[in-house]
Amino acid sequence: MAVKIRKGSALASLSITPLVDVVFLLLIFFLVATKFDEEDHALDIQLPEASEAVPIWSEPQSLVVNVNRLGEYFISGRKISQEEMEPILKNAWKNPVEDSSVIIRGDARAPFGTIVTVADLCRKLDINYSTITREE
Image (cartoon, rainbow, N blue to C red):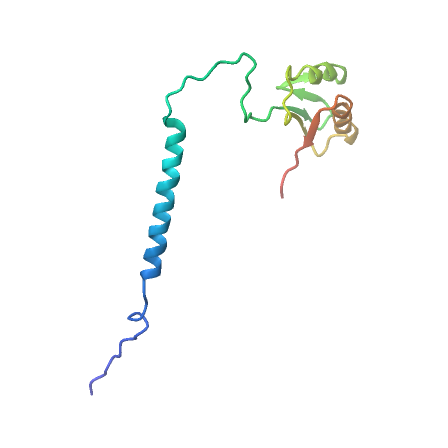
């Protein structure tokens, strides 16, 4: 007895014309966008120099204050006292950027008061600060 296998008609009716249209539209869009980008940089102009120029986008500046489990302070790997911290934070940035900040990394076993001392000093000096925690 012979078995007849019927082929489905679903694939025969599938039209890829809309897909081709979308691909061509995306291609045209990227070609036009690339053309505009080239025109901005194609002009041969000599830009003036400015002595006080700053970049439009600047990398955020941050100073990391580490507090170990004994409550000792470390900045740039150097142990400092609580009294030394204020002048260091005050002079951290000669020209503070809007997004400059102090990052406080405190050991979970450190006395809470030592971490609050750094945060309080940052508030006193009007410096943005944040604390770092570990995700579980």
